[in-house]
Image (tube, rainbow, N blue to C red; front, side, top):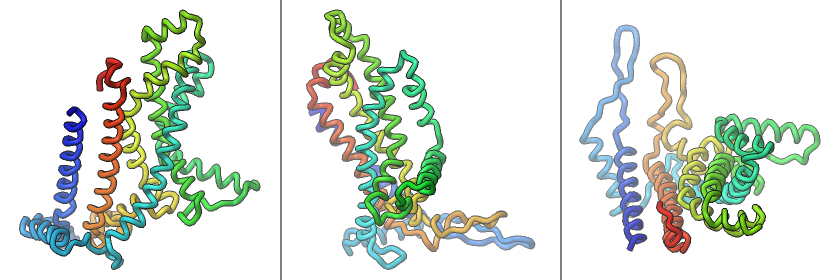
Length: 321
């Protein structure tokens, strides 16, 4: 019953998010111009009639014509979502695996070294890496890899998507911040379990710290990680554009950036700069890509909730959400 309630809430949130995206995307973006004696100023005026016409046309296209529309290149929106979305989902899966495995290991290390001289490589390093700007860290890694190649390291391409190592590199870079986030969650969960009676009892019986940590603390604290997995996914999604942009990796994030009208816009000085170009705006593609991302987050959230509600540790361990 509890999970059914959560399922309903998640589905309701999913529908509401999609409706909000559609309502925002089809707001008219037509610009007029105001001519003065010395300059030309762009002027925006909202037209309710145009807005309703945009929504009506999109509804007819979806429910009557049964198509997602076409891009400005003449290809179908569906094919672009499959092509570019598949690339992004691949590097997201790689990043998720990296973050889950190395985040847990880093969390263990942070906890084990929290009261030793090695803590500089534990909590301190985790906080430092999480505080660094993502683009700075990515550029730093790129410069380091280029330096390795220049001194004789086997050459491989850092850019594009043609080879398997392009996906592996993009997924690895995308996993940096989710890994640090996961490490903090694991370390914090283990720290909370440190003072539990079963830990004190186990140590009083002569069991080693490593044995208690591996056999008891890990199992009881890892369940606390699952509510944070959707947040870890959001960390990755928030960085996917900068990863794809800096690596020239044509995925869904970069394609969404282009579809919003920014990819071909020009930015100049003065009052007439145009960071957004309406001629390159592709609202149908924007909606389709955003729906994929929203659906992915909702699906992962449901899986995590299902695991938590079916876990005997969560139901019988006296823990709350």
